[in-house]
Image (cartoon, rainbow, N blue to C red):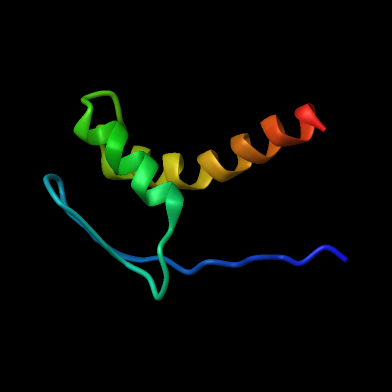
Length: 67
């Protein structure tokens, strides 16, 4: 049976700071944060939100292609 996993991420966003909270670790935030720290991540708040939403979707599509 397919079990849907829903994650709620609350955040505070400014031009120079992003603060997020979650009740459990969220891997996508770690990945996007690593991209930002590496200098090739999202440059705006809207790009950050888009990256957080797009990453799990693109990862799921790639996983589906492998099976």
